[in-house]
Image (cartoon, rainbow, N blue to C red; front, side, top):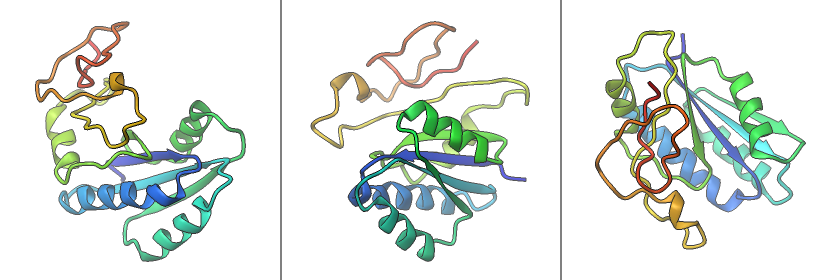
Length: 162
C-alpha cells in the first residue's frame, strides 16, 4: 500500500518542474520506510513541459504517474491527480515549490490522527519567485491550528482542521 501520494499540477513550467520533482524525490529517499508515489498532472501545457516530464520519468526510480488534463484549471488538475493517486495520504504541492529533504518524515510524524480524520498541513514557504504574491509566503517557523472556515493567509499554512 502507498503511504503518501505527492500530487504536482503543472502548466507551462517545463523549465522549472524538474527542480520540484527532484526535491520530492530527495524527500522520499530521506524517508525510506515510507511507500510513496508522485502523480504529475500536466494541465494543458503549451510549452515543453511534456519533454521535461519524459526526460525526468526515464531517470527517476520513484513510482510515478503522469496524467494529462486537457481542460485548464488547477481544480480540474488536482481532481485528476487525486483520482490517479493510490496513497493513504495525498500531498498537493505547487510546481514551483522545493520541498525540504525532511518534508516526508516531518509530514508523517506531525499527524498521528485516526484513519478517518482529514487534515490540512502546510509549512514554511520561502519566496522562490519574486512574482509570487506575498500572501502565499509563510516564513514563520511556528505552527498553528485553524478551525474549519478560517483562512490561514500569511499568518500560517500549518493547519489541522478540528
